[in-house]
Image 1 (tube, helix red, strand yellow):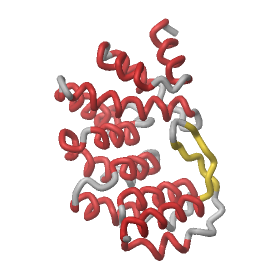
Image 2 (cartoon, one colour):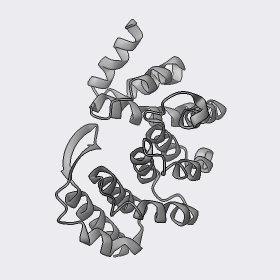
Image 3 (cartoon, one colour):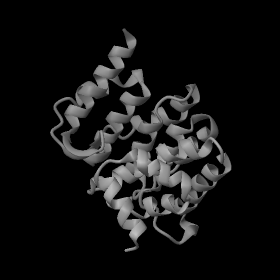
Length: 217
């Protein structure tokens, strides 16, 4: 590995996000390195890399919005069959970019959502939609039904991500379905505050239900 790659890994290990953002603004190759480190969903450093790309894109967009659009476009290309590659964490990274650049990149959100029926991408799409959260009413119109459809998935990771995403998006119509999941003991890896945690689907559904109800009060 090059010194630069080692430096980036060290900063990820330290959760030195501010330094990584500065590096990303100063050297565009940093984003490419972060993308290359984002593939292992069982590694907290991969999730940190995903988060940092989104945060860095916000800073980059202040002076070079076209560069952020180009990064997003390249990730979409990776998600298409004709790219000849593997999409790895493209949905999650795109979710972070849209989250951090809602005006500049909101048009990418429905494209991300449309990829949910690709088995390899589905979990990432649900995660991305949760991170994007609520942008406008259109977000709920096209993404809400997609996310809710996975609450009964036989895959605990999809159930958990769907429940979490519903809480982030504020899909009030799903309260009963979330309540039904409160006793779900399926365990999944869950990234939060720079760390990977093990949580049950029930814990995630309960937190999402509470978030929705708090918004209503």
